[in-house]
Length: 102
Image (cartoon, rainbow, N blue to C red):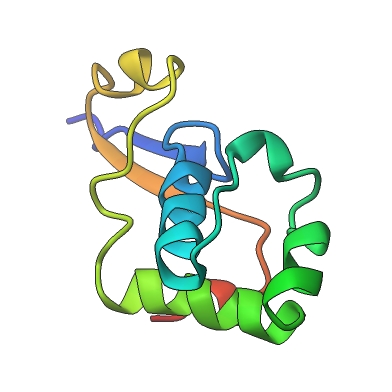
């Protein structure tokens, strides 16, 4: 008998476009009109200066996670193949633990 296929997938913007959801949330909450083109690094350095620092960025991400607002992120074009994979899929990330704990 063969073991069940297990697949590890990098989720840091590879399959789901969580930045779109995050930027939309920030725009709504802070009355801004930013686009994903305004994001130039992982920690949204430019944005953190606008809304109150890195800790506020983490707090906003945690809000999205805790309220399951990232579950239905738009997918990237790379996700088409992902949806066709058989077996168990494990999501893998190199994010700081504080950004992935819910």
